[in-house]
Image (cartoon, rainbow, N blue to C red; front, side, top):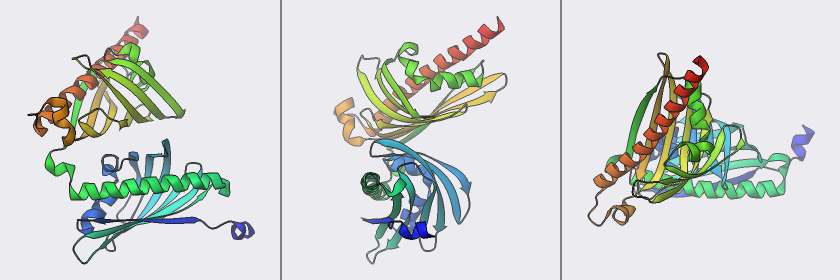
Length: 323
C-alpha cells in the first residue's frame, strides 16, 4: 500500500471530434474492431480473445511513434450509453498501464461528439518514457478520430472504393512448408521474379517489417512497406504502411489450411481505393471501375505468383524427403 501512495499519478488525456453522423452509427464503428485495420491508420491487426455482449478481450497490433506494438485489452461495452471502456491487461513497454474510454454523445443538431480519453503510466515512471507515450497517444488519438469522422461521413463500403477478394492455390505439400516460404519473405528477391528488392526485420518474434520493391509487366517499380503479424503455421496478416498509387489502404492475409494430403493457400486482399489518384495513374478518362479492375488484376497476379512459388517450394521439399 505504501508503494502505491508514493507513486506519481497517472497521466490523463482527452481528444474530441465532431462527426456528422448519428451517435449509434459512430458507436457501431468503434465497436466493430474487425474494421479497424481499414479505418484506423495506426491499427495493423485485431483479434478477439474473448467475445461477449457486454465485455470482450481483444489483442491489438498497431504502430506507435513509428514502432509496432502489441497488447491485450479488456473492453466493457455499454450500447445504451454509447460508451466503450478499455483497459490493457497485457501492455507493451514502455507502457506499464493504460486505459480509457470512447464516449459518443448526440448533439442537438443531429451530429455526434466523440470523446476519446486515456490514462497511462510508464514503466518505472520514467519521464522520457512518459513523453514517448504522450506523443504516441496524441498522434494516434488524433488520427483515429479523424478516421472515424471520414469513415462514417463517407463510407468506402457504399461508394465502390472498398475492394475485397481472395485467390486460392492447392498444394500437394506440407502446410508447414508453405508457411515457411511465406514467412521467409527476406528471401523473396531470390525466389520471386516480380520482387526486385526486399528487406525484412523482425525485432519481436512474429512481428515483421517488410520493405519491398516489386516490378510490374510494364517495367515500372513500386515500393511498399508492410507490417506482418505471423501466426505459425496458419496465417500471416499484414498491412501496408506505404501503399502504391491508387490505394489509400491495403491489408491482407495469407491463410494455410490442411487439405486432403496437402494444403490450400488463400490470399485475401482488402483495399480502399484512392479516387484522387486514378486519372494520374490510369489516364484522364479512367473511372473508379477501371481502378477496381486494374488493382484486382495487379494484386491478384503478384499474390498468385507468390502462392505458386510456395507450391513449388513445398512440393519440392516433399519430393526430396521421399526420394
